[in-house]
Image (cartoon, rainbow, N blue to C red; front, side, top):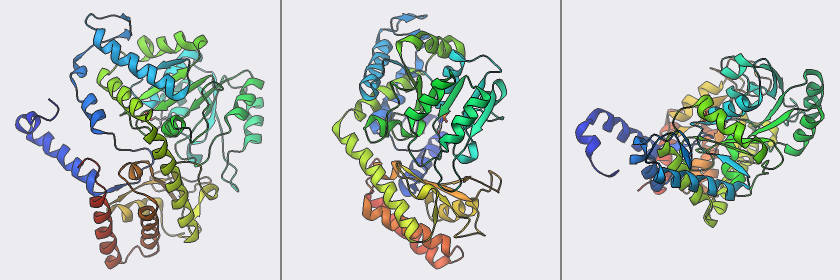
Length: 416
Ligand SMILES: *Cc1c(COP(=O)(O)O)cnc(C)c1O
């Protein structure tokens, strides 16, 4: 059924836009650190008849009839997540990572309680208490940062702030922090002030599942994640916790913050988690980190500023201020886009420009590695990125690089 031509016949406009997006994904190189390419099997599960089914509640305890098959799907997603992460309790219903965080806050906090989290301009996330997000509107927020010299989280400052503001929740995790968090240390700081520790592993869910990144499950009180970044299980969120907090989390998601689960997405999670249990996934995750490390080294050799001097994971944060003071993150994003390389502008620690302009770019290797890019391709791409940033007005260079990217992408198809 998913391969039928119903869409092309019934709605050529939407069909053509989807086809154009498919071609864009094939022909451009996706270096956005939060994106990836799911398998055809995940696409098929997400495009299935499960989108028709209401399943408010949890497996075995639903508010609707006819749930025996979707129960099985959700149980598979839960079992596989438990096997991947070693969690006692898993909730696979959050529609997104933000809603996973919302579930944990609703399960544990009262409005007005204090959250201590990483500053957005230092790599944090909107759902960690930014004023434009519900989390910043419902809760008091204090933020810790990274040491401007080293680019690493300043844990001494974190401990001092915790003692001062007495948070109910300390949040670790970030969207643009290239290093591993010291989860145990944050757990100790949280315990000292009687706060919960929420480890939001959105970006590194897949790296943790593969054992190439520290796993906070078991030490943090709550672990939330995305299922579409370094793990290829389709768009959505997940919460992991212990038996003690299981019921509170489940009721904070449903009925607290969501209605019926998106069972087609839960099926995508089950399939993607199943794929991540295969031995090839560990090799994939290792290559993702090797590729990012090589990308960082190449940038540094070519004179770019790299926050924290490298990376432990799938992303590199480039700070352009020293090497290219007149080039903004926004400029860099546009230059690269024009040759078919997709990255995003990103604020850097100590940022002086607005979030729409920025002084940095975030470069990730999870999607490129999925389509088969190895060290040779990554080194070429990293070199070309620096060439373009050095000579942003060189049209001949841009057209050569554009052709080179086309060829690299054609040699490494995603779905063909
Ligand atoms: C991506 C991300 C999320 C989740 O984002 P959604 O778009 O809501 O799925 C949450 N926390 C962090 C740190 C992230 O990077």
